Length: 372
Image (cartoon, rainbow, N blue to C red):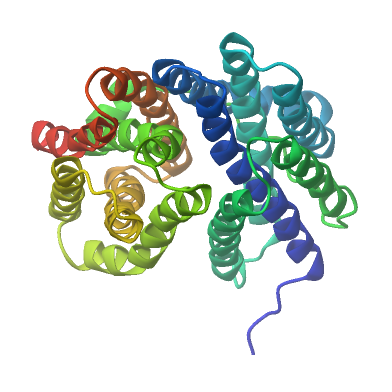
């Protein structure tokens, strides 16, 4: 009989779900509100880059904070920081303020995510760890979709979505603070060694940077693109959520294929499909909501499956004991790409046309060709 997952682990998943829902709602409401406030597209791109930069900084410095004061206190600080930054966005609506505040939000989410994942890992056993992280991934995706769809209920033109983000972030504290699960050992500080990662798997390094470049640009600027072609707020939410759903549906098929075939060719083939779909969206520049949503969902199926295959390829080539360092390093490479992506795509959208967002996804193809 399979070992049951303890209740305390489920409480941690509830906390994670509330935090991810808050992040998804804030991530969608901010660019829509920025567009309504008259921010230039290039500045909205910098807001997205600031979040990624803050996230990378959180990966470096979060473990130091945990080592100083412990997991529960740091998680409380990170959740509170998410709530405070969300409310600050209501009070001060200027590009510079939002760029700085978004960096602080990225830092908070990096710290909170690291703590949740480490806590879940140590609270599970070898018999339950697979199921725990499968549920964690499901909670992550479902919460993100629900958070994004919440903009159909709470209009970004008002204060409501930002207040809801603050409420969700505060509620995420409750199950975590009351959990009876033993706090995990302090996090290890991440040390990024690009040369070593390059020696282990050059294609994984280039692929993760390219995926971060494209996903960072899309995650920040897709709402701006959708609004610019006249989609209503509900369709904007469905478009962004559709990309996540498409990625979720393709995780298992692409993962199984990469276990049977050479992972490099799976990476290249998936990248070709993603680049081709991005090229189609850019050329057609469709305005029909259903067509756009379906094409973007298919594109999400390609974009969101490349990163785990790249990490698997690198771990295949890593030595025993190097798995954590390799995975953490690739996460930081992904974050670096996510920082650059919006800053490149936003001026293109402003100078050329809104659908210029999608040529950034062509970097998938170029990155893999270079690495091969």
